[in-house]
Image (tube, rainbow, N blue to C red; front, side):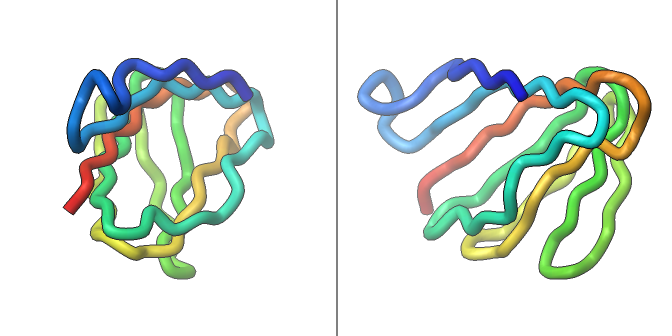
Length: 91
């Protein structure tokens, strides 16, 4: 897993964003973005999101909005590298 921060406080008051690369079978552990909304946009490949137990498959150029205080994780279940952007905003 490789993650690069694109913007975060103090540069931005309420936004945090980054780019993540996941190799096949890699995942971002389940977490909750407390008091924050999150948008995940797939740049390359495919990703599987698990949001409150629901499995959601995203392809390149698709996005998913995650409401505040929701448990979720991101996994690459494909045979190729997946790259995505995350944008998190404080509510």
